[in-house]
Length: 241
Length: 303
Image (tube, rainbow over all chains, first blue to last red):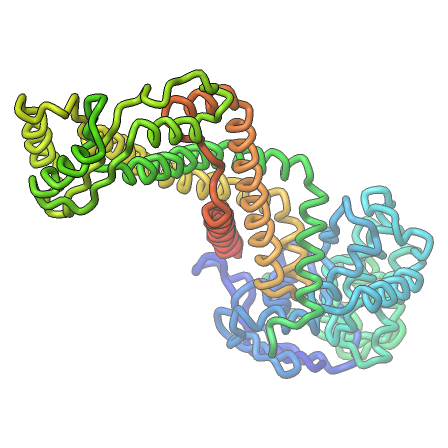
């Protein structure tokens, strides 16, 4: 799914803009990182792209959807094409891993058999085949993270948004999580990951958008850690921190 | 884009059942509260229903019941009947001989109750008079009763104004009918209130679930329907329980009912099937409406 953002502005209080003149073009099958300090507007941008916030000015085109003109009743149908991994994971802790992962398919109206098949496949892929019936409350932080990822992928989304998906994970697990998302590019999925962990960027071919005070301060591409010449200095500085 | 498909309906039903099973204690509390409130309404309806039956039964009697002195011949009965018919516009006149009166009493109370030891002429002969509709108001009936009790009509021992007693019963029935509406409105509003609060509490408990459902592309239909169905089911089960409670109370009062039966020649009955089904349908509708309103309010304000 191609995602284009044009001159997006957003403010919670009219005199305090959170996003200013944001423009992006995320091509299908691309891995994109959104980096920047806390309060730079990353999460707001992610929420706007997911339809959690109403677009005030500017335009977002995501595949066939125009988010600025998206009617409330169409929002669920847009979200069926998008997978969102929340920073707080938003799992139902008294439900089993399997039930959590099946939920998006249940909401679409897939048969129970299809739901189970797909959920089992995804949970095996994320290495939780032995925890299908385990309540999420009994899983470790890393395992919960993987359940959340499996849930975000179970309905074959065309666009994946991940808000700090590696927060609170050790480096090895973090790499694994991003690698899992990166694999989705093979089917043309567009991925946008918001992260503080700049070290991750060096490991993948990706586009990086650095945000500062609600603006895109820098944008550059990384080819397995090889930065494009025009922004090397900034990237090295950030990634080494 | 179709909002509903069969897979979706199955999923909605599954979510409803899972939602209820996951919160069984809350379900019991809710059903018990609704049943307790509805029992009061069901009891009032039951009382009104039986009063209606009682007055209907008594209505079959005449406006005036004329008790005759013993020893009157058949010829005199006939003469008296003609005289009474001529007295005013009589719609129906029925003569009951002492033998017939005894037989009727035995039938209503059971032969065992009276036995066979009574003489055939133990009860007085009676004539029931029913006047044409325009002339059956209590004042006119009383006037005619006085006419019949003049000394010159010496075959008449006494006269009972059937309508007078019936009027008192009507007054009581009207009172119950009035209170039935008041209690009905009160119970209805209480049920709505309880449901609203319950659904809010339920949604508050399930807010994370609703958030997750919103984020995975669940439609409003998918999120709302299980809550609405749940509300309807709780109200339905609550009303059935209320009917069961009231009928059991009625059953447990058998001795009182038998005494009533002997006194009034009337035995109270449980609510008819039609009334019971209407009661259940109305309660279920109330549950559905209250749940739907609260859920919509919650979702709208949450967004």
